Length: 312
Image 1 (cartoon, rainbow, N blue to C red):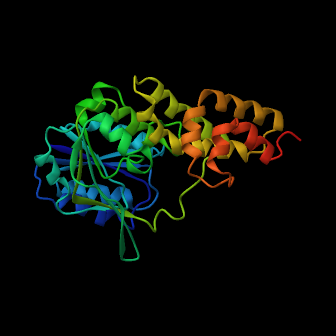
Image 2 (cartoon, rainbow, N blue to C red):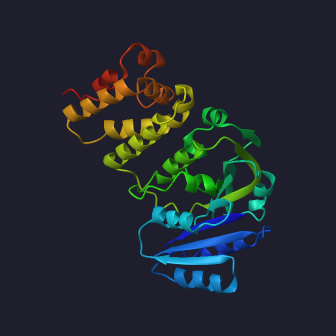
Image 3 (tube, helix red, strand yellow):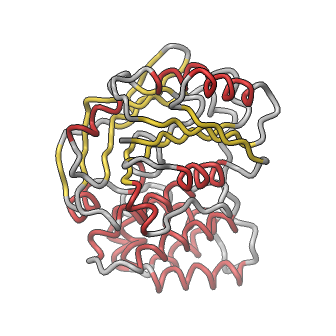
């Protein structure tokens, strides 16, 4: 039925709770793939103990090379019909995998996503249960925040493997967004559900979140755009998911330490290539406190360049 991939690096504090939440399910046809990414704490021993006690658990030890490499190894080893990703400090609800019996004909299943910190549980993503085709999903549920990460989702193994979909190991952030974009364009039946939950441990992330530098942000943006450009879709289906990557790259570029000449050239090229998308991405933001009609009447980047004294 399902292969559950858990990438692990120095996760001893929460690892027992995470693995137990996966194993304590009603579903019997399950394999749990523990990918130990060169941990230096007791995570390796914890993984080995679980594998000795429960035949559903398989452990793979590797030298440290990052979470994307670990997830890719898990995909390679997965043998069940479905794949789910669970981070080693998170937990899942007891009925988490029941959706697989109900929605066997789906290609992509989304569950509720909740955060918990110091005993307080908050909802991150809630869905009204429904079934959608690709176009319906894209126009109503943009990449950010609805499918930017791999957790709280069920993937068909055959779709991933038949299309060679992998996590980009060159990226430190955003690789999961890119993975999901590649995957969703191979789907025709998408299911949203609110009857099971994935619990995201917030306190363990607060110190580990890093921002992309300009070069990384540009690479991320180019990769996202590349995926969209390969699809024969009307622009109305692309804009919702392009808003955040485009506005993030735009703001990072605008506030970078590049010379005025290089910055202006990049901004003007971005303006020419993605004028409609950028206008849509920024029209509801108050970053520059301009009335919306100015964005419509004037060349967007000429206005922004003057506002930021880039021509000096």
